[in-house]
Image (cartoon, helix red, strand yellow):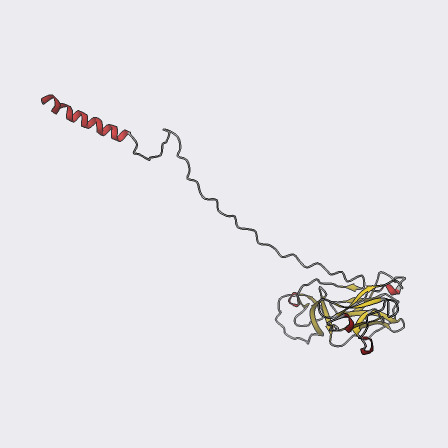
Length: 238
């Protein structure tokens, strides 16, 4: 009994030392002298770069148009000077005005280009040559074409709606005209006027009961476009 009492303190100290040296169940094993592994972090979703809207591409209006400022809606267009407006260009900030004047017309997006529709059509001046009259869309007027005169006057690009500049009378100068859209529901609502260049007009009542006859009625077919107004359709070789 005496020997057992002497061994108990020794056994207790040995058990305590073993308990301190042994890791508890579930404890992570770690090599002595090695650095602890960094905790894995969840991969954060990288923020996407803001998409910069692409500028509208200039419309294909032909060589008989100048100063084309591309647009998609009327909100893209504005005056060059909000105090003294003269040209319909890209939209800009408002200015504080010491003096101001009334805009010369309406500034809107037409056929993909900022276009000035003047309240009063500019009068022709000087002289002109066939196909040497060019539309300055931003200013709503005619300017001379420095590119020279094309040989085939009949090759003038047709117009469905908006401004046109033509040399109808060379001794009078370039004539500015504005063609309003002609509403339609079917092709039989539309007709084509060849002068001064091909453009849609409302079909005469006497012709609304039959279809267009190529060459007999004209060289270009009248069509009711997807926007609900008449357009110049395909041309025929007559």
